[in-house]
Image (cartoon, rainbow, N blue to C red; front, side):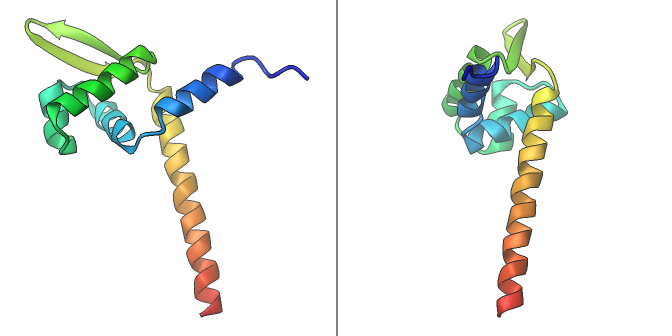
Length: 107
């Protein structure tokens, strides 16, 4: 059986999204384009770590960078990724609520 077109690329995307730090940066970028310093401050990560994650996201085509003088501003390449992240978070929270509901019923 042939794999559906795009399955491998989608698996690669999920590998990149498999970091809570990168997910946090993407959620921050969903609200507004930002530089490394702002992202480091808001995420409470070091600037080198933020830069490393942004490099990974840029190589995956998830974020783009534009330069304003010496400042590099990062932004989402498109907002489809926010829907993927939001849906995944909603799924996890629904599962957690179901699990807690089942536990509560048996207590």
